[in-house]
Image (cartoon, rainbow, N blue to C red):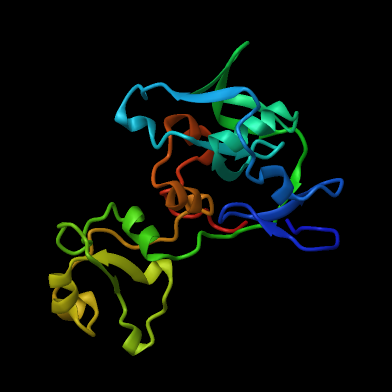
Length: 225
């Protein structure tokens, strides 16, 4: 999909860029806002450490596709201004004199946002570590570096399918050779994660309630149809 219309197109917290159909810009939709008047924030303890980092909310397009990640406060303002609906509650609560407001973990926009189609996640060092579970793909110890399977000095590409997490020892041992030439074996073949993987890189962890919308973002990208 491509964005339409004139004027600048803005980025949503490192994610896709686009604007609301009807002319309202996405930047205005998710711009920082102060806490609702007369409220104060309180945080309930998360049910377990697997709940992910508190204070973030996943924003779904009107089509239920993941769009971006915003702060819980911004998500709450989206609800209060009638621009989104609650899908899942989070662990934070805003207290006022008259009511308690649950900060959402997932919201769905009421109006559709057109964004450019992103075929794959952008390759980053942090992304490689997350994809490879922060483990050296040659020996399994904690990774400290990244390695190009086919060396760049020999025209190896800087792309997901040619980059793996590596420890310093294995990286030095392999040098400017291929794994076969160095007598080393990869734990698995490197792959490009799916497009929504950038959200995992941005927040560090996916909450359980986000998984049904993001799918297996750690898995290989789907073949183009």
